[in-house]
Structures are given as structure tokens and as C-alpha cells.
Image (cartoon, rainbow, N blue to C red; front, top):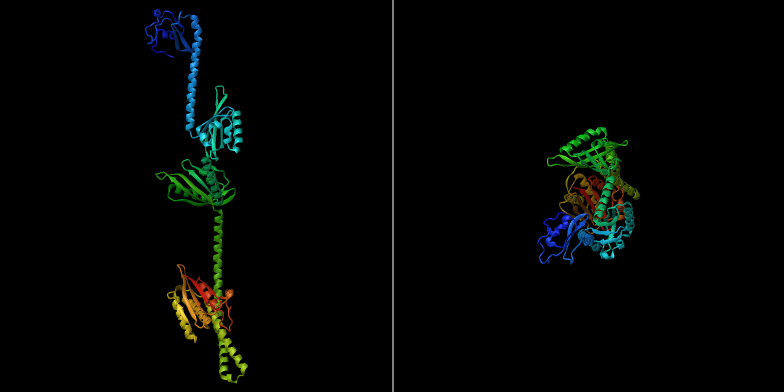
Length: 591
């Protein structure tokens, strides 16, 4: 330590390092006139140096003792002066320590973490303001071991065990645990404690902190759940995602198991190409080069071999590029499409087989149609000729010899004529039913409203006494075969007249039911006899009739013919009715 500007008796003890005795100060060699203002005249003086750790750090001056000073007194006072110096230093150190502790407390109270200190035996002796605010209790009530009451019961045992282990090993503490908040809720904290040791390595204090990690844990839990869902989705979808650092030539695959049982990690291009089928390697490399250059997307199907098993995978990728367009990173998906490829092959084989079967069935159908045409020709020519002979000669016999026939004979002859005519109607119906399933189906606009009017005129001209009212909605237009739809309307209109003829005021109505972009539906309704809906399933079957012949004559073929024509057009026909409540036939055709 250097002393600047000191002289006179005050500095003599510092300069010499020994006691300075001047019982006649005015004649001492170091005497000067520099006496502090207000100081009485100096009659005797004793200066003692102050030592600390063997160094002079100052001096103490005594003056004007009656009788002066001697060396014995100086020797007696020197230890007292040195002790005072040490006491002053201790007081300064204590003051500095107190200031340091105050600064530390202020620092602890300014942090977001919950700060605390504890004795070596883990008894808490300080809790920060944040701890008090979080727990809602004064620090004085939580010192010692009382603070443990704020720790979740399930975590207290873990904390004690961890602390004992740290003490035994001389290590710092780190543990995640739950601390109760003032509202009773527990939150997770990252708890850490540093062991302060003296120069000999002895533990003297714990300084700890608790950092709220509730949000982080919730985020990690959500991230873990998201990863689990993604991993599960990849397994269910049979695909694996990957990322590539093109600068480093590394591919990172977090989960490869949906494709092959390789562990997660980093792979290089050569390792991945080992999986590819030898015949597909060149195509893979070419596709990757084009995609990396930006001239084509990376989207390719190839084969891989793993543990002797051949699989198909679908590879796609997107690239991250520099402003200059150079690819730096890539991310993509590898999807196992082995089942899809196998299914496609099965479909192809099925289609080939189906096409072959269709050709065979078409040929069989053509042959059947040819036979049907032959049958129709035979019916038309070979059956009609003898039928005409039977009915013709029976009619001639009735006309020429009817007056000579007895009662029953004439009735028998009438029955033969009626049966022949009915058989002729059946033959005509069968021929019509046959023709509606053969031949080319022409599609052109057909005016259903006009067709209904024409059929009504035909009925009135052919049926004597056919009096009925007709209500037709104008402008019902459909697409279909004109000849076939004429057969449909003739059957429906004749049925409507036949079953409503016995009403006092027969009424037939033709109207549009619904018209959409895809379909047109229209109805033919009457107020006639109707039918029981319990037997509606028989309505469109050939030769099935819901009324006795004596009530309403017919062959049972008309509605079957109508249904086949409508179905051949790709449409549908339904009926609704009740006994003696009339009937409604609804026809739907595609536009």
C-alpha cells in the first residue's frame, strides 16, 4: 500500500514501521507546523503503525498524555491497535456481506423463477417473493421443512431420494416436480439446486430455483401425441416420411418401419439405392436428377427388395431452393403400394377376363337373338296360319250352319272363336314383347303429350262407346325410341281406359311429375278400378293379372312389355293404387 503526501510526525510511524515517541514534539526532526485546525498545542506524541497480514495499512496517533510516552506503553498498545484494525476489517466485511445478501435478495425477487436457499441438511432458510406469491403463503410459514407441504405428494418421495443421492455424491440437484399454486392447482417445475462448498469442499449451503415448465410439458405432450398419431398414420397408410440435406448428402428418416425394418436415423444415397430393384435404379437416378434440376416433379413408382421380399413403393418429394433455383433440401414420402399394384394387376386380369366373357356372352346373345328371331318368324307365320284357319272356318261354320246347330253346339263354336281370337292376341303380345328386347334402340326427342293425345284418338276410334275425359299437360319432352315409347303409351292409355270404363265419368290424366337435369318423370293416372298394392309385385310379370278375365279382358303381357322397354331405356316404372281408387303409373327416363 502506498501513502502519498504524508509527512511530519503522523507519517513517521508509517515510514519507519515502528512506534514514534516524541515527548518534546517541537524539537523532533519530523516535526512540522501542520496541526489540524482546532487541535490543542502538541506537548507529547505517540505514533503507532497499523499492521494487517504483515503489511502497514495506516497509523494511529496519540497526543498530550501527561508525563509523555515511553516504549513500554507503545509495546502495550501495539497489539490493541492491530486488533482494532482486524475488528474494523471484520465490520467492513460484514457490512459488505450484508450488502451483497441484500443485492442477492433483490436479484432473486426480480427473477421469474422461485428462488430459495437451504442449509446443508435441506432446511429452507430463504424463499423469494415469487415463491410467496405463487404459493399464497408467507415465507416465514414455509421455512425449515414446512415448504415440502407445497410439493405434490407423489413427488415428495422422489425429491427426498434425489437430494440424498446428491448429498452422498456431492452433486448438484435437478428434478422435475409439481408445486401447488395458491389456487390449489399443481404445476410442473424444473427444480435445480447448486451445492455451495467452502475451500475445504465442505457443503455449506444449497441455492435453488424452480422454473415453471408446465407449458413446455404440455407442448411436449402434445408434440409426443402428434408424433404418435403421425407414426400411427404412417403405419396404417403404409408410408414413411423423410428429409434430405442435399449439401451434406444425408437423408434423415424418423420412422422407416412402414417400408422396411430399418431403425430411425441418417442414411446416404448409396444405402438407400441398395434397396432398389436393380432394374429400377437407373430410372430412379434419372428421375431424381430431373427433379433436383427443377425440370420435372419427383413422382415415381419402383420396386425394392428387403429380406428377399419384393415390394412396390411410390416415391414423391418437394425441394427447397435458393433464390438462384439450386436445390438445397428436400422432403418427401415413400408409400408402400404393393397391395395396390397387386390389386391393379388383379383388376387388369379381371378386365381381360371380363372382356373375353363379354365377347362370349355377346356372341351367345347374338345367337339367342337369332334363335328368338327364328321363333318370332315361326310364331308369326307357322302359328298364325293354322290359327287363322281355325277361327276362319269356325266363323264360316257359324255363319253357314249356325241355324242348324243345337244350343250347346253353337256355344262350343262361339267359345272356339273367342279362344282363337284370345290366342291371336297372346301371339301379338308375345311378338311385341320379343321385339322390345331386340333391335337397335334409337334415341331422339319424343313428345309424350302429343303421343298421349294420339293414343286417346286411337282408342276413341277403335272402341265404340269409349267416352272419357282426357287431361294432358303440354310440353312433356323425353329422349327415347319413338316406336317403343308409342308401345308404352298405347298400353298405359288402353289400360287406363279399360279399367275406368265402368265409372260414371271416366277420367285419364297425363302430367309431368318432376323434371331435373338428369331425369324426366311423367305419370298416367285414371279413376278406375285400381288394384290391391299387396299384389303389386305381380303387376309387371308376364301372364300375371290382378283381375279376372270376366271382369277385364287382357293377356297379362302389356305391362311386362312396358317395363322392359322402360328398363332398356335406363329408366324405371312404378305404380301406386288402391281398390276402386284408380291407379297412377310413374315413368322415369334419363335425359
